[in-house]
Amino acid sequence: MGSALPARPLGKRPRAENSVAAGSRPARHADAKGAMRFRHALPALAVALAAAAAWGPPAVAAPGEGGGAAAGTPAGTGSAPSGDSGGAAFGQAAPKPKHRRRHHRAQPTSTPAGAHSFPIAGVFDWGGPDAGFGAKRKGHRHQGQDLAAASGTPVIAPYRGVVTAVQYQAKGAGRYVVIDGEDYDYVFMHLRTGSIVVREGERVRTGQAIGAVGSTGESSGPHLHFELWEGTWYDGGHPIDPLPLLQQWASPASG
Image (cartoon, rainbow, N blue to C red):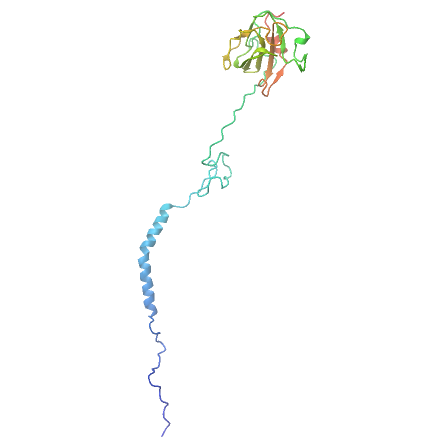
């Protein structure tokens, strides 16, 4: 007799090679479930994409549109784009422009005949060397031309302009007027008390009455102290010798 085959242990069956672990499902079942979940998620995904399209791309400030901050950047933290207007950042108050005082352009020494009027409408005298521009005074130099005339002789505007000062200085100019002319600043000092007929801010024409010759302030006798300034009187300007122009404007009444 041949030898017997070994006995198989009771209670155990051989496992097939292609069998799956207990409790697990075939792979095709998992793929089918994933596909079903994706189909259910499609409507929600479509809604999200439509909302994003409605919002559009993020806005960006165009260069040169006034120095505003780019979208999403807090004002004052981002740098202004190149080529901007240099104005204040968006939301800030624009700086107020500074007031610029007008400085006059001096006219040539030779002016058209009749364009200006001599400041004294009556008989006057040029005075001596101490009456001229640059003459020595106590602590300073004379800044104008003294024109001697009788008290009450009319004083008139040599050229049109605006009256900028009607004041009184006891120890000095006395009663005086300053006119911001269209070519120079004109100054009239030692005017007679009660004779001034213009006020500050008034626009005057060539030849208009200003006041009358007097001797107010520090004065030794009736005369008009007349000054001519290039630029603004005591505010950036400077006095010039008025004699050449006065001689040109002089009337036949000059002595």
